[in-house]
Image 1 (cartoon, one colour):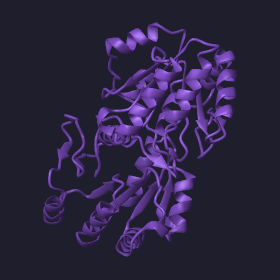
Image 2 (image 1 turned 45 degrees about the vertical axis):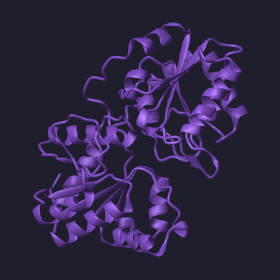
Image 3 (image 1 turned 90 degrees about the vertical axis):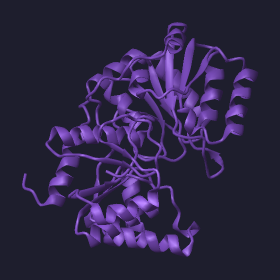
Image 4 (image 1 turned 30 degrees about the vertical axis):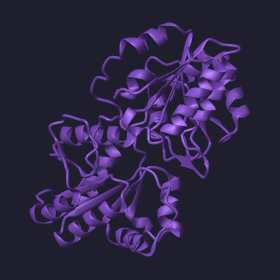
Length: 350
């Protein structure tokens, strides 16, 4: 597999780690090549790549694996692995965890990379119908695409939380959790909706005792000015004791299991593994309607602060009923679907 392995505990990194576990449990040996050299994991299957260009050349001549499964978001890496698979006659799977690129904004050579990848790759896993539609719009054959969302349940323990987090949780009647992989903007607005969460915390605090926990690994804070601005707003609203940033590399599931509800106010998204994780664990979840969400999610209008507030109030007032409703839902299992993709591409039966 080409990609990073948790920690850090971003959605893709967690997916890769859990998929590696599922594949090994089914008898498939796995090596994870961290071609972007960002993983902090000590996983025995992980190979950290310090010099990607030299490694790609070396891998071209020495590849031993039967299948290359690419998770990286880089078109250059996707193209390089597609080329290696074609020349060395290996099977290749590309998973598109999101698709925010706009082809009209690309340069000539990047467009050529995109066309090369979509024409020559083996199978593609799209994590949502929206991603699949965009792949088809860009010219990818529908026959190559399997639409399987990226959520895989955790089969290992989720660890313990730091003492300061436990103290924060104990200090409030209810806990709302949220997370983000970066501090990017999308079309001029906060991609992960952190600004909306701070505004919501300020309003909700006038009526309820809810502590907000926002998880983002320190290394993913790629906009320090915006981060400091958000902290200033928190201080101005007087909610320092109600809004907690957690920067440690933690399995987010550990936070979810201590949460009364989860919020995902993104303005663009794939399937959002954290929403699926929350629903799977019976934690009521409010999410923007920007993409298809797991069954059981409570949707609000994207970037509509008033609608988010009203949906949150309704959830808090009826929290027990929402929890019972989730407990009656069928659990989402995607591991077998992905294993079927491996069987298809390797030409195995059943």
